Length: 227
Image 1 (cartoon, rainbow, N blue to C red):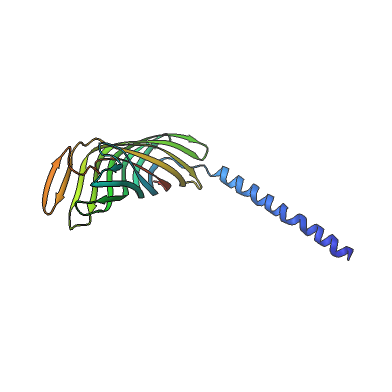
Image 2: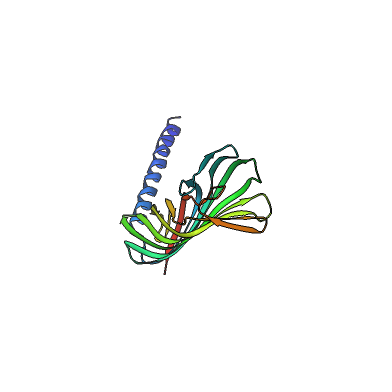
């Protein structure tokens, strides 16, 4: 009985000892392999997108047109070069969807909405240990579409856009990282084109003002460096 107790006592010390040794080994390996922040960098983002009021509002309350442009799915990719650890430049693409919920008394309702944005990415980065604190600056071009239930009817607004927003990444290995980010896209276009039954009308003040708005995207990021 005493012999069994002593055996259990010795065994109870082995498990925390093994855990401690494994933790020390992992810490030594992580500190030995420093992140490689030079070369090319590819990254993706998946999350959500929401409306920010612009020349058109995100919520309207009218007798004939009442509703809200609600948040929906958002995603994007970027491919860039990091000539130095603290700066990268390249191309960025973002696609953010809206969920338009409007009660329309004089026509078809909206089915879905979304915005494509491409830009020239410039990102200053503050590298701290395995963390990258960055800030996106990307002048570019956006195309915002609100699709109606009827045929090919839609509202379209397109033009110059400015994308800015913070990023936060942590390197898990020498080249692979995960993180999060927020992108604010500000559209400068003034007019919107409305297609109804094969006829297109463009103007600044049309009957339905769902576009152009601004947009915010947010989500989980992952990527890596190469080269």
